[in-house]
Length: 105
Length: 120
Image (cartoon, rainbow over all chains, first blue to last red; front, side, top):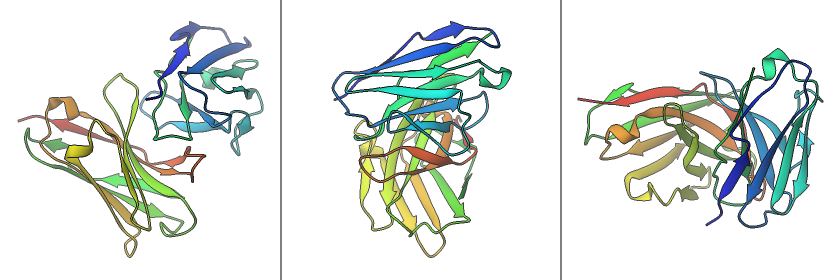
């Protein structure tokens, strides 16, 4: 079974910072990877699909890259509303999610 | 597309948890989407329980498969979850969500979630 890891598990950042989160799959998933943002008490929100495609309405400061087994989510110029937990998910298999990365102040 | 979960917020141990998701502003029968249930234990990560296509095709998380039934009612634009023999470990927030077609099984629309507590 495929396993997903994310690093770091948490990161402290400031408004305006650039934040990079890494997601690694135990086996290649080509470019079939999605990223989600979840704020406390809210449902997850799809940010990026197919590794690098921005979901409609998502600010362009979010970007995704990678293929195969290694992927990155980058948030440029962190905004106050970006403090949240981020999850990756391989989409070409039965859905499972990475353990999450919490971005806090 | 909007999704809304409904069902009891409190279930007794050993009983069956039953939830329904009502889909609005879109047909549950249209396109190649799947419809899913995802849960999140308090303070923990996301776990997909099952998903279903309007054709009736179903997929279950192997770790829960023996206790789960997912069903769909296209006439009501709803789909449902039944989780049997619940224990305190099933206490979680349950979300319903729309899932894209393979190989892009991403979750693009979500309900707000409903907290289900298993307790006597």
